[in-house]
Amino acid sequence: MGMSSEKMKIILIGAGNLATRLALALQAKGLAPEWVYSRTEESSRRLSEQLPHSHYTTRLDSLPTDGDLYIFAVKDSVLPQLLSAMPANAGLWVHTAGSVDREVFRPYTNRYGVFYPMQTFSKERAVDFDDIPFFIEANSEADTARLHDLAARLSGKVYRADSEQRKYLHLAAVFACNFTNHLYALCDRILQEHNLPFEAMLPLIRETAAKVADMSPFDAQTGPAIRYDQNIIAKQEALLTDPTMREIYTLLSRSIHETHNPDKPKES
Amino acid sequence: MGMSSEKMKIILIGAGNLATRLALALQAKGLAPEWVYSRTEESSRRLSEQLPHSHYTTRLDSLPTDGDLYIFAVKDSVLPQLLSAMPANAGLWVHTAGSVDREVFRPYTNRYGVFYPMQTFSKERAVDFDDIPFFIEANSEADTARLHDLAARLSGKVYRADSEQRKYLHLAAVFACNFTNHLYALCDRILQEHNLPFEAMLPLIRETAAKVADMSPFDAQTGPAIRYDQNIIAKQEALLTDPTMREIYTLLSRSIHETHNPDKPKES
Image 1: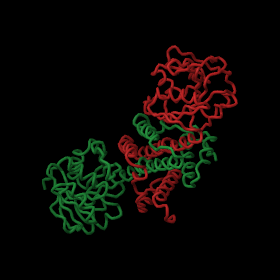
Image 2: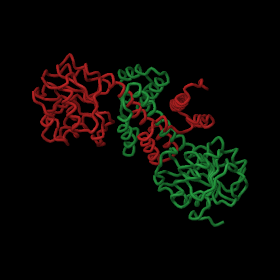
Image 3: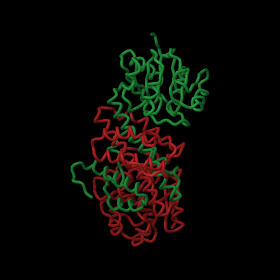
Image 4: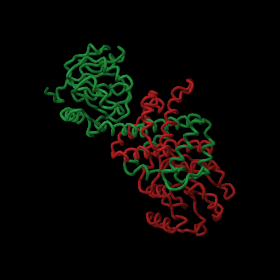
């Protein structure tokens, strides 16, 4: 089967944040998905409307079976049930998840792989795909090469990673993105409670993120915990009335201290 | 005493990261400190060498007493002992700390205030002061206006904040910067242990930081914890062999879940 990424027939399963941003990025490269499946009519139609000439459906058995590439961009937890309901076909099936093993496909099809763009996606916010690292793998060298080609049309950063490495990438990304964003949210909560503008925090947030492009995060560490200024640590803990936030403050301060003083016995 | 910021005689006490970046920023505006004090000859000389025409000393009693502005940019913990050893003078004394009350100066001088640039500083990395929010206060309206003038020469973002508000700003900044950077460091540790490049994480880090300029961090939250995907949460916890990192993973996941489900009873 001759499948160059230039004239690939792409079927997209999913219409969430990632599916939406990926579909629009593919379309911008002349690779718009021809079909969109979603569980609900509303979300499949909403995405399909942004992709002229595309079709949408809420029934897997309505999807064409002559697709070149079936992209499953859905929640990890619903993937197995979708796969078991998919009509058999000879296309290449890929998912876009960080923590799902490639072999999830094995019971259902012969050609499969992973097409994982490591980024945080919101429906409302466009992201520059050229800057997004793609981690790809497939169960044959030919399909790995095809996915590499396709990813390289979207992004300047394409890596091969097996399922084991991808698990750790995703875990690392949870720290760098999801947990980091939650710290921003806690910061916002503190500011709101004291009528201070979150906007004033943006330069600090930007610089903290920019700094680690120039130096390792270990070397970039600043603040009371690395100085182990127990006076201010105690004062700041006392300002936090929410028990979970205080727990986070205490634990992260201790972790910073441990990281920078690996040999010292733990003080309490 | 006529003190316009255009011809202010500035004395700098401290030669650490913040003192260094602030001195260079002042110099760029034609306001280079004329004297630099530091506890060690090496650090006072190193900074003074970057400020042509400046003097340096390791003795507080060698500092001139006709300064207009004495900037104490030192660790919170050493400030009181420095203040008690300062020769009396009629200048305006300010510190640059987030969590130190303005009244720390009261026993030692009549004119005092705070000049707090909310940013993370490293000696090796230049930062654009124009983008740094300055929070200022003083014990007289005239000196508050002087500090406002001076800050406005360095930055486009000058706010008045009393010591109570500043404490919470600093606490919020610890979450948004110091703790965030530590999460980057933990991310780096995971990647290093699996021979994956930290560089691949930079677009995600950048986008996570950029996103909250457009939407609230609450709305920007993504990832397994907000979906409360317990399957993947359990799998990721199991990947973490370091007990402190696992504790952090569990606590932050719970906090994200609680934040987005304030009314639900806690699941375990």
